[in-house]
Image (cartoon, rainbow, N blue to C red):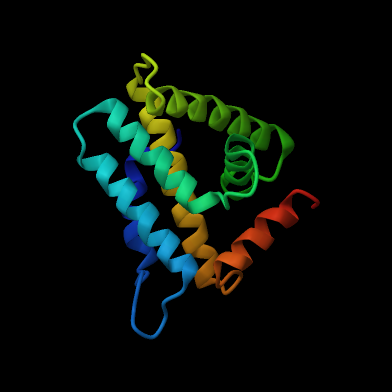
Length: 158
């Protein structure tokens, strides 16, 4: 987990107004929701609850409800935040699959205990996903949820 302690400064550097009267769309709403889940995770004292909040933040940002959530979430996370090489993408994909399995265990009443390193990992993935999307908006590469879905879908064939 590189530079996890610098996430706050990365958010600050973006200088990004999340919602304004002049620029409000479905993608910004997804960002707002996921940032709220990130914040709830930071403010919770329960490891399991914090972890679950990050997983919900990831779902709200990177899934569409059309396909298998685990597969789509893991793929989209890898396409968005991993380096372009296949090994990096595989690592993020497999890690996200494992993390999401833990989320399902917590949410469905399993006796799952989250370790601090797992919470830090999913929190990092959520923060980096938010940062990457905001960066793409600022670079005028994506401007709506449809653009984000198209971008992620295109990664599968690129």
